[in-house]
Length: 86
Image 1: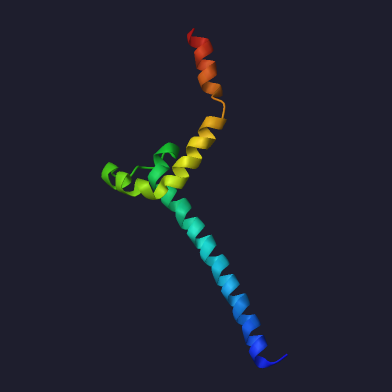
Image 2: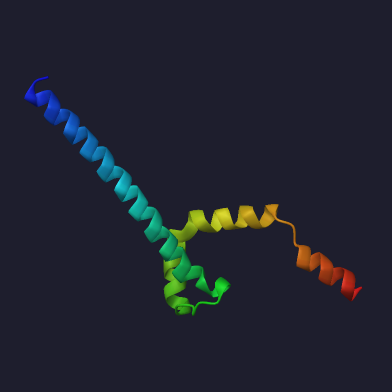
């Protein structure tokens, strides 16, 4: 193998590894961002409402996934409360 081909192979591997690392970091930051905005659901202190409303458009995909997940789940506690209340 000539030196140019070896360099091309190593640079291709490095670019692939860097891309994978960036995707992982982006996913982790998105998860942290979602936790900041929706942390009140798990008992964390919520950020001020103005900041949350300004950042909410960036969470559009997460909100869509949350709505789909919510629609596909059964409300066991709601059904139980409905039976107990009448």
